[in-house]
Length: 110
Image (cartoon, rainbow, N blue to C red):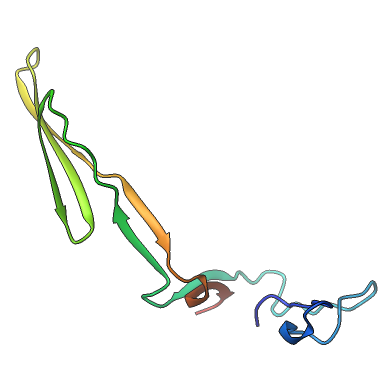
């Protein structure tokens, strides 16, 4: 399974024996009414999640905390007209793909 590769320059990387030509038959597995659900497979070295450290704002009461790669900024402020105190949490996520060969997507039924 996977993407067929046919390269005339570097044939050692080929995963098929020849190119698709006009008039070739294509077989589709399943029926026309069958739904195929996308699935994801991955290893822990496939991707990661972290956050970008945000600067502390000195104009209002704020704090920045970092723990295990995640940085969150907290603001405490007040709405004097409504007589309420509010808090705001800011997080800027960062996604990374460590190795694209450690994961992929396939379609099929469970």
